[in-house]
Image (tube, rainbow, N blue to C red; front, top):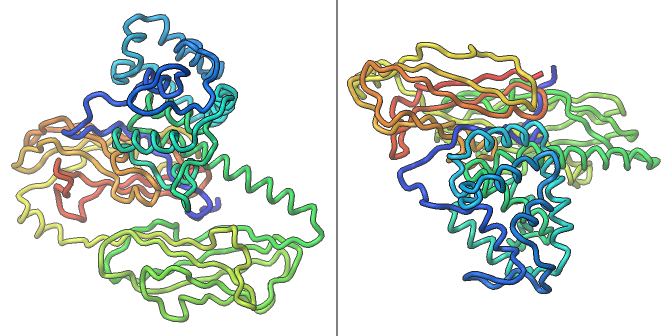
Length: 452
């Protein structure tokens, strides 16, 4: 089995149980408001997004045209129940059963999003005001307090201009999914964005095969697995194996680190390759350096350059290394200082877990409060979630409001596994309601996935 680098796999797709803090917004965007954004006649507090209004459509007709046949049952449920129709998904908790079914369906059939986008493109056949769409989008994101992952933002935004891309069908689809999955919007898009980028890459590879000369590179594997957790000052050894899959020689090439997040000596900043690498040959650049003393998440990148110092593959991300530095305290001393701890009674399933890539997976811990303190609104948080480009709130699972000393609770996380094979670590910590760790930093729960 090949262990894929973070650069080429995009990131883990989590569908964790939604976390709700004490300041949860009262209402939130719903499908009725989505419709009103594109309403052809009336407009609310913001100007109409239309330059040329389209033909009139009722709410029912609007969503019948927008939703593809495979999820048309959602529209059926909305319009055949008066209570749902009046609420129009303003409170998704009361529609939990079919919202959960839709979420599962989108995780397992991510191209349904493409079908919605295609229908939205036909629906928005009139002229849209770019300025109004951009301003309204930014206002909604601000009012709804939506955290957008970097990949989803790149999908919707022109990052240089900091404005929406003019693919309004993508924006309308985003609105619809945001109204249904306000706390899981990034999770819903992960598989879809990965598949899009992966297919675009395959198409580029096929197109390049038709040329007489082709310069190609293919990742083989790396060791140890990426996204590791180390202690301050611990030595990091990492090796990548790459293959020349083109039909030209690599002469005098090397990898150079183009990010200065930590200071590297010349041996680790510049990774020379053999003077000549023939088509079909493999190379194994390696690094060995000490982890920073400051705890945090670190991302490093090396790009291949030719003998003239030019990037050999400017469209590729290069060699990525992601790791987290945790300042581990002595557990016995910490237990005395903190006056208590917890014990994991059972874990279902026990790790490491062999699972299928791109499928839904759940993990459960049964935890006992072994201390003398009442756990008041504690929650479980994935502390290396930023490695997977997720908004913090999406990686939190609340406990029951109060957990008494000696009480046992069951905590379940649910997520869609990454779309390609590899070994993945997720690290979770129990947090207080103020967002600080409830227990010593070395007290953590891990999910180790071996995806096939």
